[in-house]
Amino acid sequence: MGTSGVLRSRPAQGVLLELGLSSGPDSAGSSGVHPSSSRRDDGDLAMRETMRAVVFCGEGAWRIESHPTPQLRTEDEVLLKVERASICGTDLHILSVPPGHPATPGTILGHEYVATVVEVGSGVRHLRPGDRVVVDPNITCGICEYCRLGFSNMCENMTTLGIFRHGGLAEWSVAPAKAVHKISSQVPLDRATLAEPFSCVLHSFERSAFVPGESVAILGAGPIGLMFLMLYKAAGAYPICVVEPVKFRRHMAESLGADAALDPSAHDVLREIKGRTRLGADIVIDAVGTLLPEALWLVRRGGRIVLFGMNVHAER
Ligand SMILES: [Zn+2]
Ligand SMILES: [Zn+2]
Image 1 (spheres, rainbow, N blue to C red):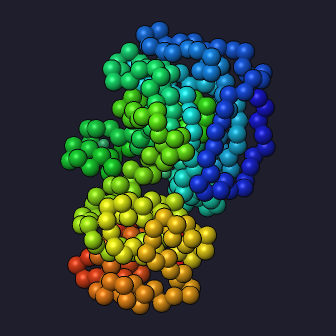
Image 2: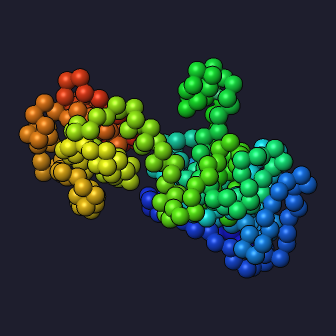
Image 3: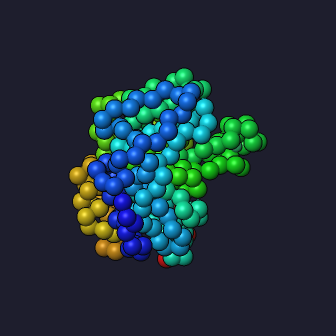
């Protein structure tokens, strides 16, 4: 497959990509098989020497190009056939000019993906070819002081698939076995690919020490804000007030059960939320990344604020 020209347009947030196999000049070859590994090798999963991949080409640039199909290098890795991958806000930050997040040029992007295990290294015991998995893209060392304190999210040697190492916006991907999690084959692909961002939302939810019946204000109704909404709704929050300037997203929030979807350009948000909660919200979520001052106004005394978003370019 030839390479397309360098694309400088930004991909739309939330778009799901599927890089299916197609027959073409690349499809005739087959690659070597790791000698001491277990692999399933049939029809749709047949390997080729090259694959299509979305590659980060340096500041503001990416392209879909032909890339060598990855192979296992160590006994604790797995080879994955990517089923579906999604585009994260972080990908947009990586591709913005100037970049809002670092990444290694030449890396295959994509850190939110669902895949089928095709081959496992000889040291892998908990996975088999054919297993369906989601990927935890943050690869931690397990031995630095932070890892040993139990804060692997602060690992001093962390690297990330799809940002600093090849990721899942490709037909195939190699990942450490410890980074993949088996899931049911019943979970629809479009949902399964959101496991990584949802796990971050769930972690924040747990840290917010929520008690059923508490009130929640969610600032920003993008995919992350909406996930928070669904989670707090299912957990019994009331009322849940969403603040979002984009009409489409406000409607989405209402359809997902928000008790109020407020347009900050048309509403006195502080008054609206105090009117519904009297003291202020028990929990305020900043799902934008720049709204700590607003969160401090909206939260009740002794309440909790979740700072979820990261947005170094946001204008205030
Ligand atoms: Zn992400
Ligand atoms: Zn570490």
